[in-house]
Length: 486
Image (cartoon, rainbow, N blue to C red; front, side):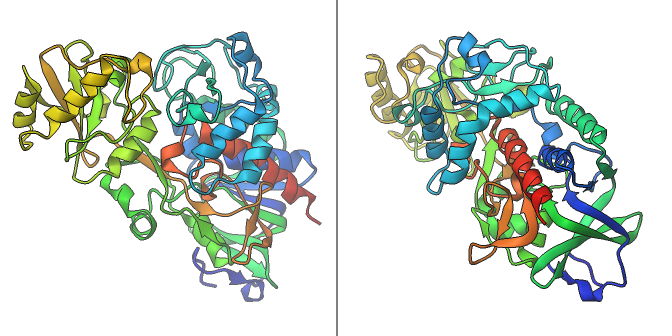
C-alpha cells in the first residue's frame, strides 16, 4: 500500500482496518473542531486526526475575530447604535467575493450569522460587548466590535450600508485565536470525540466511487481508518507548500511570510485524488501592518510609475493585496509632517526619503523628474476641497500633503512583513459535500475551512474575521451533513 495524498487507495488493497469510526475529521483547527462537535452531537462517533502536536492550526495564530452581521445586527452592533440588515450584509459579502462569489453560501451565512454568534457564546466564547471606534488592525485590549473590513470605503459603501462587523473574543492583547481554540477543544473533548495528535492524513481510501476512509501516519506507521459515514477535510490551505504555491499562486511568492502552521495542501491534494475540482487556487490574502498610526491613512500610496493605485482608507489587506500586484519590487507611502508617524516596527517599512519639497523626495527616491510631484499636486488640489475624484477616499481621510518636511515610506513585499495565506481550494456545497469535476457530490467526502474556496475567495475583498467565521459556520454544517449520511 503506497500512501500519498495524490493517490486514492482502493479498499481492495487493504488487509484490514486499524480504526473504525463514523466520521473521521482531518485537522483540529476551528473548521475541524466545529465539524466534530456537530457530528458528535448528532449521534455519530467522531475521531479527529491532527498532524501537529495539539489543536489550533492557523486558527490559533489569529486574533480570534469573527465577521458577523445581518438580521438587524448582533446585540453588540445594536447596542453601539448600528443596524445591519441581512440584505446589506449579503451585498457586502457578494462584492467582497470578487468576480465569482458563492451566492448560495453568502445567502445562508448572511441569514444565520447572528444565530451563529449566539452559538459561539453558548460554547463559552466570551465577548466584552463594547464598540471600539477608529481604524485599527486588532484590538490591543479586550474590546469586541471593530471596523474590520472595507465597509466604509469605496466601492463597498455604494452597495451596502456600512456597519462594523468584526467581533473579537474577549482577550487582552493580540492573538485571541489560541483562547478561542482552547474553548472549542474543551467542548470537543466533552462531546466524546476521540483525538489523535501527531497523526497526519496520508491518503483517502476509496470504495466503488465513494470515500470509505483514510490512511493516517502516526508513530512511524500507516494506520487505516474506516469512516463509515465520511471523511471531513479541514487541513487548511497550502501556503507552506512552495511547489503548490509555484503552480497555483506564484504571485504570493513575492511576499516574505507565509501565515500558517502546517498548511501543506494535503487535504486539497487528497480531494483531487478523489476526483474533486478546485477553484480560485490563484487567490491569496496578504497584508502588512502599515498602520497604526491611523493618521497614515491620510497619506497616499504610489507604485514605481509614481501613480496611486488604491483608496488608502480601505481594509489593510485590500491595500497590500493591490500593492503586491503592482509592477516592480516595492511601493511607497507618501506623508507630510502633519500626518507622519512610524508604522509599527513589525511592518519593517523603510524611511526611504525625506525632503523639503516633493521634488526633493522624488529625486532622493531615484524617480524621473515629473513623476511623483505631479501625482501629489493633483491629489492636493482636490484634497483642499475634501475630494478624491480618482480613488474616492472618504473625506475624513483626505487632506493635502502640504506641510514639510515630506517623507516616503517604502514597503517591499519580499523584505517587509507581508504575511499571506491561500484562499483557493476544493469546491463544496454550503453543507460541506465536496464536488467532483462534473459538479456532483463525491459520496463520503466533506470539507471546510481553507481547504475549500469558501466565503473568502478574493484577496482584494478579504475582511478580518472572515476566515474564522466561514470555517466555523460551514464546518458546523459539514459536521451535521456527514453525521446524517446513511
